[in-house]
Each structure stands twice: as structure tokens, then as C-alpha cells.
Length: 256
Image: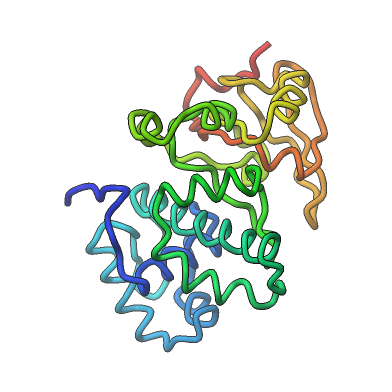
């Protein structure tokens, strides 16, 4: 099985499945066939056939009678599609003033034709948003191998193409499980956001340990550089990490 390229064109149907798998499983958890069927309003038999196809393509690992989980390749593609969709929702609502209940359907129709260049321009126009308006879901980090949004802003379009895409799948710290650890690899936002996080000790390469996650989008409690911090979601949404495996002793301790 060959690895799929980031710019491969997929059918709208496949992208829709990848998007729902990302939303329901947060990119890491197995999603039941029945949950996919209910969310897409499609017969379970049709869902099973599509999951088998996605398994053959290498985008998911399908377990009969259980469900499917995204592979590393599938997760990258799902994040890309989801990011475009949620940026479009933000644009439709904030710029075009379309009602929240209508932006989802409209974004679904537009996301498949949004180029990478248009996506980057849209992100800059919206000033690097962190959540979409429809259901206040987190907008995934971009796929460019920048460490901060400030680096992206300083680059011209032709220079961005030379930067290349990330090799790792990043997640926001709000998606870490309790006691899970991650290495800071991308910080979203303008200079003020970056400076605020740096003042807290949250810098590139720092190890973050998730201590406690408050329900209903409440604050998260983390440990970083020997200190414990409580972060509101609006700031925590902007810190993205590479997960540190539990058996990785190099990242097990919090950096001092």
C-alpha cells in the first residue's frame, strides 16, 4: 500500500466519511458503524461497504461489527478536509453574515473545491480562528511545517511551497487525555497570543502533561516546566502538540 499524497483528490463521499470519523473519534478512537450511520442518515449496510473501501485505500482500520479508526494517513486527510470546512463556516458566518444553522450545509458544498492557497488566504483573512461558529468545534492546525502563525504571515505564497507539510499529526492540548503528554510543536495566533503563552513557559519543544479537563468546555489544567497552570479553552485551543508515547522515557518527565 502506497502512502497517499496530501494533494490527492478524493470524492465528496469519501471526504464526508473521513470528516465524520474525525469528528466522532477525535482522530484517535474507534467509531461505531451505527454512530456513522445515524450521523450521516445512511443505512448501516452502506456504511459498512464504505468503511471496507476506506480500509483498502489505507485511510481507516476497519473491524467488522465494531467500527473503524483513522490511520495516520487517513487522519492527515481528515484534518485537512475538516479544516477547510470549518474555515469556510467561519467565513460564511463572520464575513458573509449567513446564519449559523445554514453555514454547515453551504460549507459542505464548497470545501471540496477550496485549494490550499485559498485555504491559507482564508485563514489569514479571518485572523487565524480557532473555532467554527456552527457547533464551536476546534479548527485543526494547518498542515504547513511552521512553528507559529507569525512565520506563515511573513512568507510569500511561493516561499510557502518550499516549506513543505508536517510529517507529524498534531492535536490541540484540549484533545489530550488526562495524564497524557505531548511536545509543543505549533502555536497558533498573533504575536500577543504567542507572547502570552511564552510567558507561561509554553514554548516550542516544551513537554505538556494533561492533569485535568473540566467538562462543558471549561479550563484545562496542565503541567509544564515544573509548574501547574489552568488555561481557558480560548487560549488552550491554540497550542498543538505531538503525543509522547507512554513508553518514551525521554518525554516522560516534565521539563524543568
